Image (cartoon, rainbow, N blue to C red):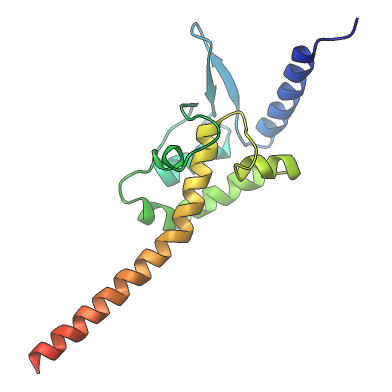
Length: 160
């Protein structure tokens, strides 16, 4: 009789995660004695630098999110002044480095973009939060600037 399906999945998962870890993406470890899965080693995983720079979150991470990822799960790790953090050059560089390390094929791209479930759903939520913020925050700034300009014009009208 051949190997069980569970054993084969375990071997495939192990091979996949060790490949990601060797690229500096995300290490997986089990916390003793609880058996809780922990994600990320700040000494070697670029995903940890991304989590720290952009969200102020340190590794190892505990996966507290559920699949499928909801918008509220994706946004629950937002720090104060999230837009300012995401716009920082250090955050952008850390995101790009983590993406380079974590995305190497079609499957890993689907996991990165949260189209398929990965090992750490919370980690996928951080990526989704970054992507949403980096697309929405510039719009917020434009609206704020337009509002200030309109208020300045109104105030100028009052002075005349």
